[in-house]
Length: 130
Image (cartoon, rainbow, N blue to C red):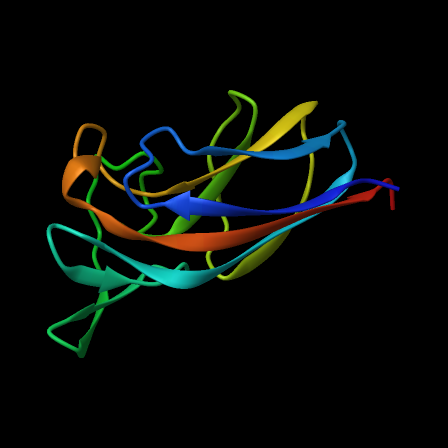
């Protein structure tokens, strides 16, 4: 059986946060996120990529040059080692395509993490070979 950990993912953490959970190719793992963060000095986001401006729902904010293109700014994303980024949102289960440690991050444009605030809490669980 695999391992499990809960980590804080600050919205300012460009490059993401190591989870302490390692996976081997073909193992199944789940990443779940909760909490709230903000970018651009105050646009509030949730792990699923939804945002609120001045307390009002404003949909997802798409930028082509974010770390994981095609996913909204503020979405919780993950990858294994230096592999490709994956969409997590509130919760997602994956089959590992490579060996390595799971990294979790706040999706934003490279170099633009400085005005972010808040954090998500990510739960990472390696279910092992299923």
